[in-house]
Length: 416
Image (tube, rainbow, N blue to C red):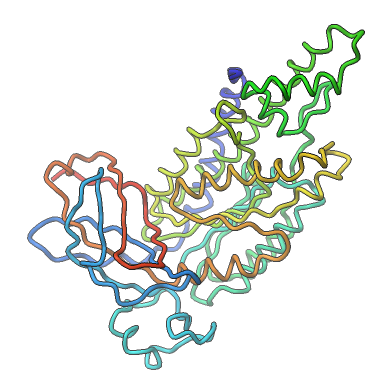
């Protein structure tokens, strides 16, 4: 495997501080969220919030505490209680579309389980560096669809990354975010290229040690009389691998910066990332390889008590035929898959969900709104050995078929 030059790590370290500072400023005046219910017990309990949704994304009603299984560091812990909390007054529970329900008109099961509705907090994170200047409209249009579907009580904020050029603190005045979308432009720059025409797929294969692909590229790019050409090809592979890796590091660090800022806002929040892709090597040893930073982003989401949804706005077809890109039709599908794999890895690490968007984003955003409309708050009884102030791995299951469970992957249990 080709080692990552120190330069890329230095650039990455320098970018982190600026991203976190900008994201912290965005949420410094964020609205206070409703405090989660306190559990009255002679034993100090740990609260873990969990989304349980069906195949259509609608919250599953009526689950009891004994239907949940919670493991901390691989060992089961007693679930003392499970409270159902409603966050949006949508009629998803009654199956009546999107018409709001007044408290008196809610079905009995909902009235018995639902907590007081106070609105949700969303932040839209737009990865400007993933879009060419002419393609940013796709991200803006997708974001407008989401804003138009919010409830009046919902808060919505906006942040671009990694440059933080556009920021709107979460607000119920949704028009402010809508207007700010016009300021978002694509900032993707042409890839670093030497004399060799390389696709991302070829870079991944060659850095993974695939000699057949290297030989094929050399045969395509080099004349037999140019004996120095094979070395130039290998040097260009290293340069492009470094360029792809820096781009991926900067985008992931932008997401981490937003999550770090959202940790300062109490209660549950949802970060919706809109990106044209983060390329990640799709085979062992391949570059770009930023899996360590991706794992750190997942931990940041858990620490911030933030739901993470990622929308991949696929612009690969446009990029392939762009004069700036120099993409290859033969590798277009794989290059697109690789750019989605980085986003998928971040969503998986954070216990979130990735949606691919090739045309309109209606279905994806409707799913996000359904899933975040309600959740369960579990009261867990930890062991004395858990109370060490350290981070512990958490896994939540439900004894019911056909459901998806979304929960944080880690929890910090304070010392007594």
